[in-house]
Image (tube, rainbow, N blue to C red):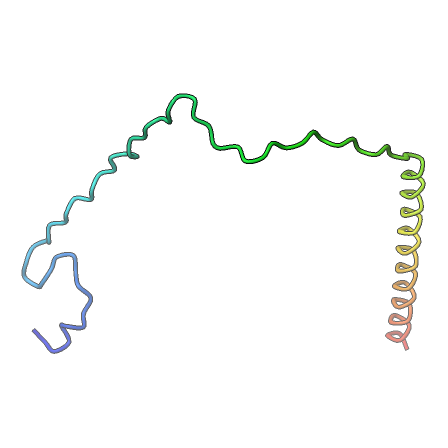
Length: 99
């Protein structure tokens, strides 16, 4: 036995010169514990009864459609403006590379 033996990783066979160390069998799963059903007629306590649902206000579909159309037009305009700015920047960069 050398001075470095204490720092070596243990082997599955135990100390040198001995056979394999017997492994304990892992415990088997016995399943979940038994449960008892609640008594007949049991319910969780009710604290407050909710009220009847309210009537929603009517929707103005023509105003909604007009608003959506204006939003779509604005979005297309912003996209075209951004695209044109990027195209100008691309032309400027390509023009400087050629000079």
